[in-house]
Image (cartoon, rainbow, N blue to C red; front, side, top):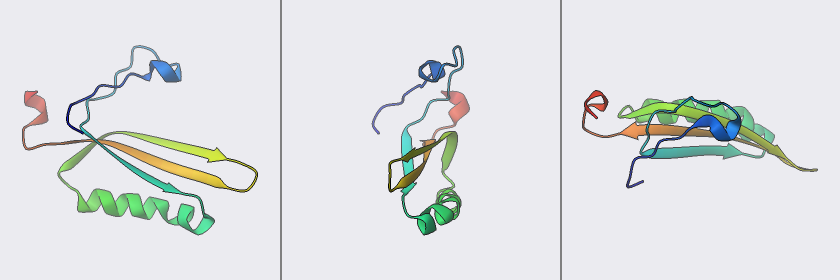
Length: 87
């Protein structure tokens, strides 16, 4: 992502709450039961392997149809050499 963004939770019915700025997003998704069971470990490993990325928000979503259930974990992060407090 080239430019910073700011999210608000108004779309979710929570007003006046602002999510910290982010300049990157990583989505982990799985539809098979075995993959859904391992999703947490995949997220944890990615966070461990990317210490320069500061997680500022997380969204967990589930969708289903007659046959499949999809679980997605979306991480919003800030990555940059500058001190976040200086922004």
